[in-house]
Length: 498
Ligand code: HEM
Image (cartoon, rainbow, N blue to C red):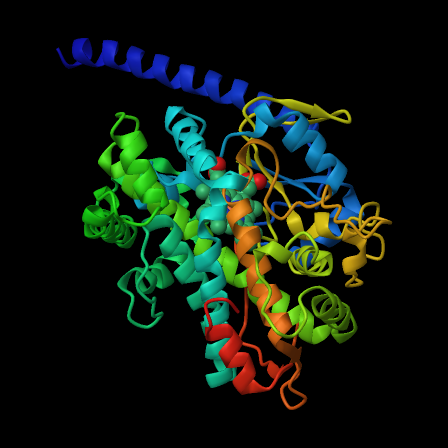
């Protein structure tokens, strides 16, 4: 009897086992075949996070595209401008996807975090809505508020120069919440619940973007293991409550005809009414934009200020153009944008010098792509590495030299065709127009108002950044010398016409 029951069971078990062995072997051979053709890279199976300078060294040693094996996963890093545009732009359809992340995408983002979406209908709708709102003409709607907030930074700095990084955060937070939700009341970093929440969540979400950050991304079954990822799930719930709550808080303003123009108003009146976005999608769409905008913008402006202090000779060139074009009787506005080419060039060079996103952002190869006889296999995680691309000597000769002139053509006009700070191809940043307008008005107003200097007692370590998807400056000191009499400066910046 026992034998009768056992035999079919054993036969079935042997069959299942044999199938597993065959599938495993085929998969192993395929993986080995592909791995044999992978772009070169450092030996071994390095794990963990790689500092940008180490990646740059590998790129110099092994070539413009390198690969690293992480267990059975393949990581491909593109470190030169030409290769990044050839692959991520010219063959953009193969790299439009993001790697699937259980931790960041499914648990924390509930499958609705913009930055982590795989190619799907939701991504198409999100990108379309974002493009409509952030196209160059549409972003002009925020000029007056961006100008006002930039001037407030100067008044803040006159009161408390040591907290310059905080003042820039407040600028970035004010612009972001104004544009996304239509929030017009003053934003305080220490009391605004949304910004406090962001401060806690941004490192968590950004951390979850890096490959291998959570075991559950390698072993997805872990999410069903009781007790696993309790903290992640709690963060996910907290985030959900916050995003839905914030949208509801602004609902009456968003739906009223007299409420200020904002992304939220636009989405609610246009797309939700037309049935394109559900309520939760709207909440996560808006929250994703805030998350992507706030941190990057403030880091970029702080980098511009750091560069101004570190390279006074280039700051002097900007000052000379500001004096010639804007003069000292009124502060710069968006009307001066086209003429202030030295400000624009300085910004582009600062973004190259210390990229906001040194690693770039992860993509997933959706099919095998052959490059120079090597194979970037389907499923590989691919990064266009901004740090190394910024140091591509073919495109940026003497890359370690801070030289804004590299962004100006022989007629002194801006040539930003080699700019890469907002990414490549089909997943390029959707907010770059708004971001560049924030950087412009902040930089022009700051440099018109002050000479920004190093504090001789507390010299700047311009390599002191915390590595991550967004690389933050560690606290650093600056001194601000007003370029006008302080009372006149305050008067100009507080006046409506200044
Ligand atoms: C200086 C400021 C900024 C920098 C340096 C920056 C940079 C980037 C980069 C490098 C990417 C990834 C692109 C890629 O995969 O190749 C990205 C994506 C994104 N950015 Fe920005 N960004 C900035 C500001 C903003 C702003 C102001 C917004 C919105 C208002 C925004 C919204 C987004 C979104 C939603 C994505 C994800 C797009 C997608 O996955 O399809 N960013 N950004």
